[in-house]
Length: 263
Image 1: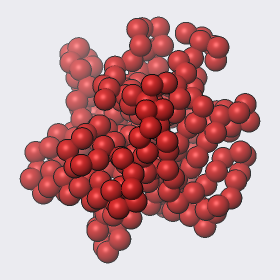
Image 2 (image 1 turned 180 degrees about the horizontal axis):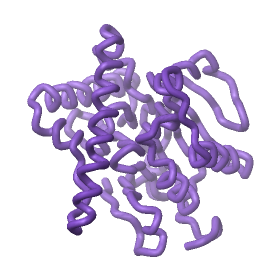
Image 3 (image 1 turned 90 degrees about the vertical axis):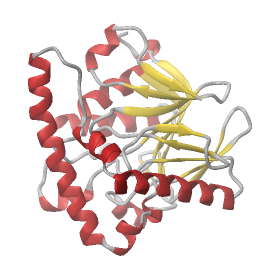
Image 4 (image 1 turned 60 degrees about the vertical axis):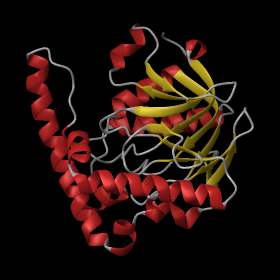
């Protein structure tokens, strides 16, 4: 694929946890993904820009600027772009209700899918007790995550030498540590309960960097994943079907359609 005319087009795309402004951000992969995927509506589901990181150390290479310009270009060409801020880009919550460059900023949104289901669109940090009640601990955890990403780079550099596939240290730790697994489960249940309270059939969120589509809490729980490790997004097809798209290597544009899981 090489042009916008050849891009896969969906009814909606949901992207979260890009963390522009950090060294771990896979801006190259996201830019390539945006070149080869388009939608009538794109939801930016929080932590797109990492204000926490930028306040301590300025890191903004050209690829990060290119991602912003690509999204703005899509908005100018008629794509509806809705930005729901998260905790790392909470500075944008001061601009809720406004538009900039054709992008709508809103605290949360409701999306009506083609199959008639309604989805609450929210980042999810407002339901994270650590973020809300122990901000210092959230910042400490953020630094630990950055360290895990750095270690991951070294580990996977060696794995590539031996022809072994990518392996995520942080995802492995989340699944092995009992408290982390309990935290993820509680997060899912809380977000599902909020969707039910608002009369929605499902919720699309981010925050915990773990892409999934689940129907275990009375409503559909959907998490977009991230663009630091997994490089995942959620796509809605014309019939309302949701799918997890994984786009880990820019070279994938020369291969068959990306890895996906649908529901």
